[in-house]
Image (cartoon, rainbow, N blue to C red; front, side, top):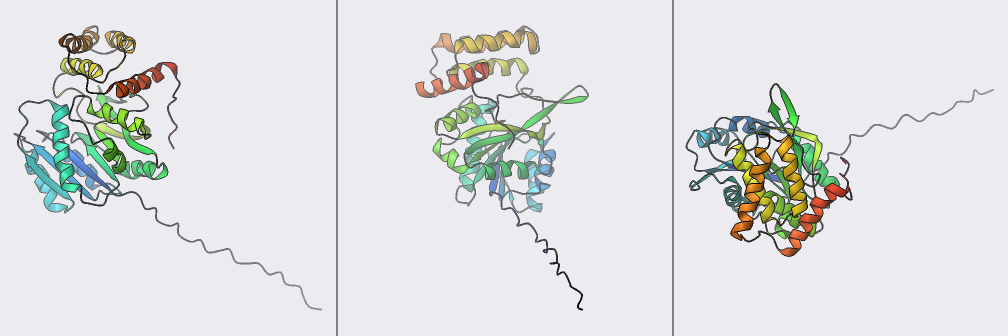
Length: 311
């Protein structure tokens, strides 16, 4: 009698997972008088798990050691480039930063990349920041503009800066190249980092930030030009982008009681808006773009468009 033998297949050999190919990206960083912080962001990007194809830092006429610090890293990493340009007449960061960005983009436009990042030089990023952000672009072909969410120091603690769900932080704004070209690039105007989102959404792209992809902003927002001036500028931007009066009134009332300095914060924002209105200043948007912006703002009140999940 023969003993029956049961044949058992050996467990299949576990094959290594195929390496995920993420979109190629480039970084452009306008910089001016950033010697206090710039080494942090240079170390942060050099330590990324997924490094950029190229990184152009555009020195906008610094009077401190900013260009020398950049050159030290450029000698060490061949994918870092320093580009110098003459200083802007005054610190008006919004239009100037776009002009500097455009100079950097001209240097990179012939490269084969899918994502371009406008990155400030007063940030600190975790080593997987771009890996995670690029994965979101890879998983969502309609994602046009995105960022992580930034934290600032308040006393002994870091706190997250709240943003509308559709907004990507201007300090670390990644934009798909196709989207960038369709919207005509960044507009050299105050409010450029909202106007790009308006135009992108009108073209059918999604814009957003991800709360599970944090980074640190080393300088308190607005401190470079002063808090009250920043609030005044925000009021001007709201006017330039054609925002509705009712939403703006609510925004100012909230600022009176929530933002510091109390009362003056809301008043300063109102002054910026009224100054543009009384002067008859033209809008930075078309009538259609203004309607789109008002719809984006109103959706925050009605809840018609909910914050999308972190895919």
